[in-house]
Length: 167
Ligand SMILES: Cc1cc2nc3c(=O)[nH]c(=O)nc-3n(C[C@H](O)[C@H](O)[C@H](O)COP(=O)(O)O)c2cc1C
Image 1 (spheres, rainbow, N blue to C red):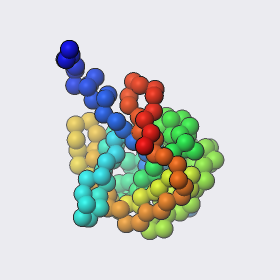
Image 2 (cartoon, rainbow, N blue to C red; image 1 turned 135 degrees about the horizontal axis):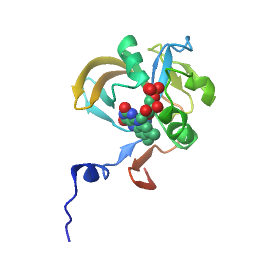
Image 3 (cartoon, protein in one colour; image 1 turned 60 degrees about the horizontal axis):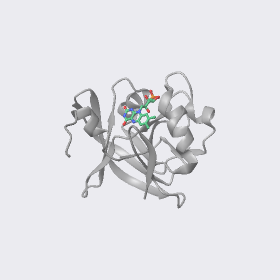
Image 4 (tube, helix red, strand yellow; image 1 turned 60 degrees about the vertical axis):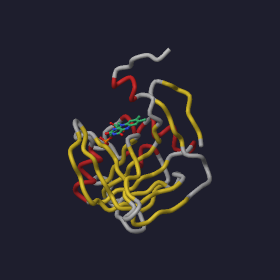
């Protein structure tokens, strides 16, 4: 029997990737940051564009807008705990999440931002556009470099359902 759902309840069924967005300057612990994001998608083949939807209050958004670059770190088991923990719950305005979490980090190849060496794949992006979308800002970037670090499966999850779907 079909059941009517509210838009909010229905949206909880959309499968979402577990991603950490990093931005700022790898060399400067006061000017670098990162946050967990699930509202991430590819949006164009040519050029290869990705989109992240970020709430205006996030420190990471400030860094993306200041440096016009960011990295999309695709999370597998190694980074799962820090993605749900420190990168998804604390503000980088007050702490350096990279030293607190002790994640392995290096400077991007084509961007200044830190990239996470325990990610499965990292997409380095140059900001091409931002636009308002309701209560979030869409950040769109062109992938200018990409690195694969390991063979884990990307984590995909559904809100309100603790079971994780794997590739
Ligand atoms: C699983 C998960 C997914 C999240 N997805 C998003 C997202 O897509 N967009 C967003 O703005 N915040 C998202 N957040 C919240 C941010 O990661 C969180 O507010 C973070 O502390 C912001 O850090 P910052 O202020 O240092 O940028 C998510 C958090 C978790 C745990």
